[in-house]
View 1 (tube, rainbow, N blue to C red):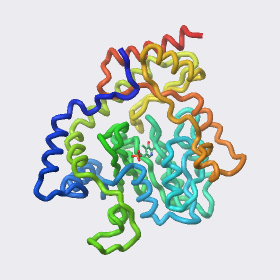
View 2: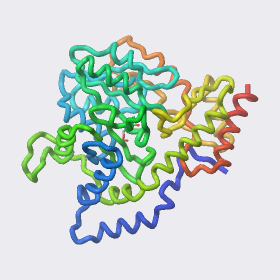
View 3: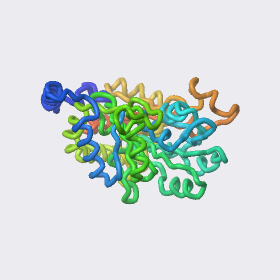
Length: 370
Ligand SMILES: *Cc1c(COP(=O)(O)O)cnc(C)c1O
């Protein structure tokens, strides 16, 4: 029996609701498929639950980053400090608005961008800093908030992977002037399609983002600023509003699986589990670091257990971004993470027996395989 890294039956339990919603919205008299009442209701739901001033649903998590950068007037000649280790949008969203990403190294243990490294890269051209929560650990937002205030730069929180996580009582997304969520399938609140949201405590920033996502208009055919098309689908909004009810329970199941893995992995030779705990943790992806990562991955595959390497290369070494990185600069902790990281299955409907099988296999590899 295989345990895939990512489940093929993610929405199976909600199939009937999904089909009913498609029929309902597809045959409704108003024939409204984007930015209608369901999108508004979904935004209102998230805003109320979060205690945010505004939540603006948009085309993707990547688009959400771009919308916030535009709303903050980040553009040509500006620099934005981003993590050297993470997903492509951290760099591409900045380049897309015409600004320069400046790559900062990560903490070797948590693999989250290091506040000291970020602060060291702030120059007179820095307009914003953009820490990102990674896998299961939130960035050190109290320090980033302090740095942003002290150095007079904007703070954009890439909370794409951390919806539902809380650090020192403040939810992920509300630490920055704006935060983002992603609803792409693989994320903790993923859906069958593309989508994301901007969340903010600042009503004016929210208004700007709302205008920018729909061609810079508040009123139809009055374009106040140059915007983009980053609108939200009505069916997905209705489906997400329905699925929100079970989110807390699914996140709790992820956290428990993670806790169990971390307990089982403590003290295993050559293996480093993520830091335990609940404060500032989001169990989107469970990553261990191993000195023998590729061997471990092969061993798990032989036992029918899927795993995944996020991310195989630091962002500034990627062909697309290398020419935006200073020649000769290195990001040793990002490089080390790329060589050692391995993500294990953690989706909520893994059975206890499957979780045990994964844990047993990792333990067997660490203690018996030489
Ligand atoms: C997934 C992700 C994004 C982008 O979200 P999409 O919805 O896939 O565009 C941005 N930042 C981080 C850290 C992510 O993990």
